[in-house]
Length: 311
Image (cartoon, rainbow, N blue to C red; front, side):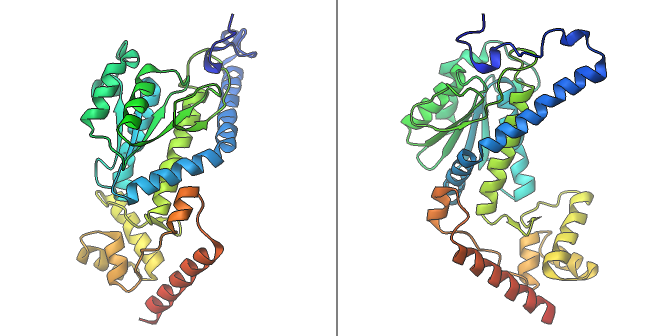
């Protein structure tokens, strides 16, 4: 019965009688899917590296990272896009999501929206997608009309495109393909389970890796953090203390002088500049750069820290 269907719609061999299991046993079976999702993401890391490199290239070149999705996939894209400004100091709109059904689909299902290819094309045109942008379509089945139409229109307008899918058979002409082969769901077709978990992990990895290439992170710290509340101001102080080799009072004073900009506080306190980035070839390949480039960056950081300690 499931022959010819996308993998996410097929029957799972362990789903028979799932509803009759004791809750702890049912949860264990479901949780095994989370582990399978993580393994699927691990197998897709080479393709994710290429997508992250393309995203970094787009952003460095003045373009944007644009997600397009419907249902769970669209909401996951919107979630990742919303987290980039506060975490990495990206200007709003540099990472964005086109969601089938619009803003109301973020809170409730909008019936039929995923089939509306014309709406997808209008959304791409309305977002003024162009040749500097990377558009990533997110579709567990790889067959969602909204996503495929968005990718087609984006490509027609000169943008680079990628497809993030859990269906190994899915294709989108000209798109870089990232396959998260999670297989059938324990609740057939419910891609908020394994496929959704894998997509969330993959999107977090994609955007974070791109931000690494943009120099938004140094030694595992958010140097473009937007400190908008007490928790984040405390984190900003700790970052400046650790990277700038400063005491708590000195770090807080530097941040206040810099308007709570972590990067500016570090640079004005003699701990910068924080402008190292790999060469363009590394961005295209998804690699971090040649060993000599990485050694150069390490030497630069060491000199900066020595300078801050001596002052």
